[in-house]
Image 1 (spheres, rainbow, N blue to C red):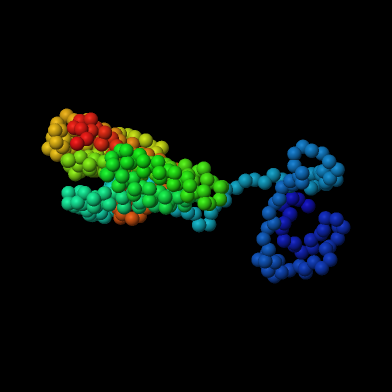
Image 2: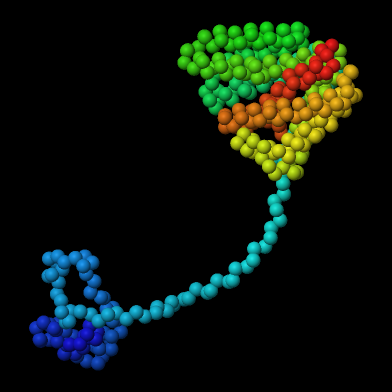
Length: 374
């Protein structure tokens, strides 16, 4: 028997390889059966003799396998498989069409921000030039709301429970004392507020006492004590003009930084703290604030001259930027974007006080140096 008969359909008179006789139960010979059987069968593929364990290892089972030319199949000749349904060739890649660069957005609702800003400005100016006591009340309310936002975020994000009640009462008292008694009154109110925070926290379990009172003292200094310098400016004869100069320079500095940074900003100022701020924006803040400072000192402040306004504007731009970065550092540590949602387009009260609070003592001090405290 030759190798070509492996896998072929049995023919009439087929003899098995072992006994030399006809296979029992074999179908009768005949051309009709041959044709029918050929239609129902197909050639068996040739399977090469593959070792069970591979490699060159010799073992008992390998020795027991049949060997010899009778049991070896001829090498399988490779052939190219022709796919039944060949896939069409993909089209040649088309050159990417140039897309217009995305339009630069402001990142917030400018309409709401402008509307809220104009409304707050109208309330502040009206209270400032009509009845000074009303303006002091506005500052006190802003301080209390700011303290509430700050302590609320500290508790939510860090589990720090700074006592809000003594902070709110002491903060409002600080603002009033600064207007009535000046720096001496502000310091006394600050000391009493700190003492009240320490005692108030003693009514609760001692766990976390140190971190709670530390956060309370920080909040008392950061919000109400710095705000007292605004009401201390109001004590002077031209106090309304001084406060208005302080507010205008801070707002102009923020606006200059925002406008120039949004349009020309390329180099990050402090990417780890506030990725949106750029050095170009800082230069814009300095330029805008210095120009506004020269105008305000020359025409709004008694005995003021324009070059003093240049220095004042420079100091305001630096302190406002540092204050903004300082609160950004706090918010990044807390893992939040805004301190609150009270002011649409702005965030919370603390998001508007961030640059005002550290700038207040700077403006108060420079005005006292330039034109005195009267």
